[in-house]
Length: 266
Image (cartoon, rainbow, N blue to C red; front, side, top):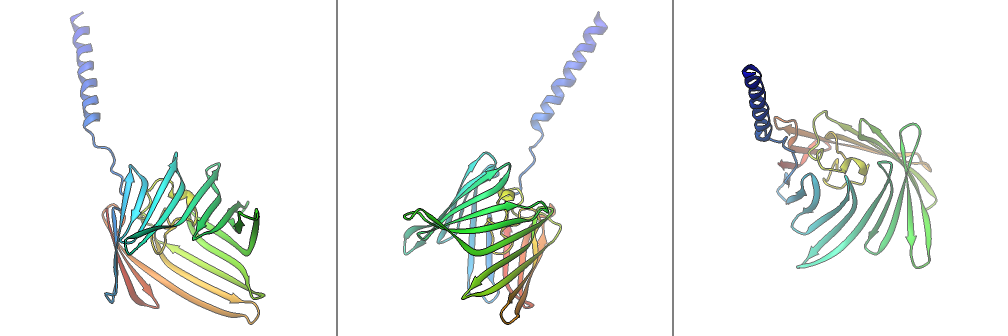
């Protein structure tokens, strides 16, 4: 009986010790950007953007004269409101609502400076996504589909291609953006709900839609079908990383010249 008593006492001691260890073990720290500082190389401007969270839900993004606020339902961002201030007067410049079905973004409803737009996302069997654009006239109760169609292609969660077709003055244009990424963590990877926004995210100037890896090159091609003229350009980005594999500095290039340096503070 004594042997059994000491055995049970030993087991209880081990369980208590394990529980205490679990309570003392630190939670895994979420790496989230607190501030982003962007500077032009020629010194013409410096901008500071600050981020406010509830856990890993983004609540507000603010700079000296701009502010974005976000509303969630569950793990998804359902509303974004943007404000701009001039001479101490703040104005709401846009309000965007996001609708999802089966964890997929299907409708984006946006009011910007008095004009209402609606974007429909249609998912294709080959994994691409079509984006249709509509102008909404609430007074007339009409929706006008614009002559613009975009097709989005993704690889491992990263947006890798946007193909656009549109008409202007009876001339048809085709436009292609190609995006290349590194294999490191995006600064925005741990922000809840960002991965659902496809190309609707706007948290950074370049690669704003990247919730997985970091954008390091953008190639742009435009073709005018009437005269077959092509306009091409490529921009590049280089990064420095912390030990966790998140970017701490981004150097942006245009035509082989450095034009902006961005620092990430976590």
